[in-house]
Amino acid sequence: MNLLDIRNLSIELDTPNGQILAVDKVSLSIKEGEVRGLVGESGSGKSLLAQAIIGVLNDKWHVHADRFHWRGIDLLRLSIAERKALLCRDIAMIFQEPMSCLDPTTLIGAQLNEAIDPSQFTGYFWQRNKQRKSAVVKLLHKVGIKNHSECINSYPHQLTEAICQRVMIAIALAGRPILLIADEPTAAMESTNQGQIYRLLANLNQLKNMSILLISHDLENLTHWTKTITVMYSGQFVEAGTTSQIFNKPMHPYTRALVDSSTRANLQLPSKSRLMTLPGSIPILQHLPIGCRLGPRCPRAQQNCVEAPRVSSYHGHKVSCHFPILHDTVRKNEIKRNVVKEKV
Amino acid sequence: MTSLLEVRDIEKSFKIKGYWYHKKKFNALAPVSFTIEANKTLAIVGEAGSGKSTLAKILVGAEPPNSGNIFLNGQKLQNNHFKQRCQHIRMIFQDSGTTLNPSLTIQELLDEPLRLNTRLNEIKRRKLIRTTLQKVGLLGDHMNFYPHMFSGGQKQRISLARAIILEPQVIILDEALAALDPSLRSQIINLLLDLQQQMGLAYILISHNLGIVRHFSDDVMVMSQGHVVEKGKTTDVMRNPQHKVTQKLMMSQNFQFK
Image (cartoon, rainbow over all chains, first blue to last red; front, side, top):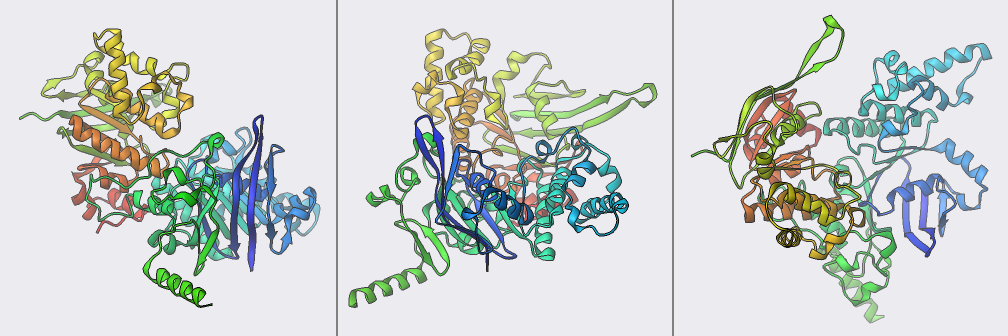
């Protein structure tokens, strides 16, 4: 069963010059126990989408969706209080730059203590304090911090970035979430620490069967850790499929360019040769192109591209493009289907 | 034949403040020496605190070394002779958004190094700014814009223009590609490679993305805690990493070079 099922979610921003469609009809579904990657460059609306899921956008942003279900419950019909209670229990989020997200004036122990759900305790009230303390220590052990007493008694600035991110994950785990949303958890982090954090998340996924939505701007970092990937560009849905489908047989020109421009995917390329790139730069929010927003930069663009393309699915590999790059097997099927249509 | 840039036994240590008995010395950089030729790229990889940024600062002259010498074309660079140094060795930083002065237009930004280091008159300077902007893939008319009007990739192009406007011989890229989006990053890599061919630049690339290092550099130097632990041709080092630190770095990025 799908944990989270979002169909055609749009997010609009009120500005003095009218409304801007920042996220345009994006679909996303997460199954139980799945690690899904959400890839997009800056300004692609991936963080907005995550914020819309947990409902922390302010009044300027308007969220519409055809379907927005969490474990079969329609979130759009619930009142704000009901929705908050539901999502607080089931979803947790960790942010980039852990140092700036933790309270700099409070000890780590107190911040963890605050996050612990009191309903898990049994016993008398005078036992509570002790139970809380042991729960804090347990959480820290869970995320792989061994010298817990030192960590509890220090402020965020005294710890390294990787430890801070672990503490953030511990705080997120305190509510025993079913879905963890990780918004660029390893941005601006050393590569060895990045590996540690990703490994920790992968462990949690396997041991606790926790689903993870991993958001990142870099396709090549994610491929090792995710089962399925959704790609976004400039607020539009681009492509979704399993990691190998996306990385080995990308259908959308944008994904193709991302994979081609990655230096790690093209190790056979002679060094110092030119990399494949898309011309131009990412459009800013005030000047979005109509139709397919990749249009002006796309090498395969044609006249139809001024209309937004529909999502088509090839064996679970969804792509939103008028002229997808079809591989041989897919193309044969496509031809067959057309032949059948003509006969009918 | 003398090489373009030769670094001989550069050493740097910082004093840690403390009580009388607790005064300590922190060795940021053990004696390091290397050479670079024109048209070549040297990559420096290593973890945080391995001394790679200290090395970059010493090379551009932002910090004096405790001992050791730097030779450019066989000529010794003085520690406090900035005019000589900043003409030949330039640096690009990681976050181009914060390294450009927001209150100056692009023309004023690029004019500064020219006014301080050359004797060109205003018309010639203006012309040079225009051609340099075109070289990095922007328009000449962009020089009346302010930095906030540009996107991240374009800002990085401007800092590149500021680096090449004095026609240097060595450019130091301190994580200059890390903060960019993937599609813009490959654009900048292409641009840097083109400029290297046109102007015969030597690059010193400080990065922890091994994919870029593999693609971009000829030689690589792996540093750990101020020491150079491995040095050699990039392909050789990556095919057959000898030192533990190198192996660990490659493991952590799931990097396999076939």
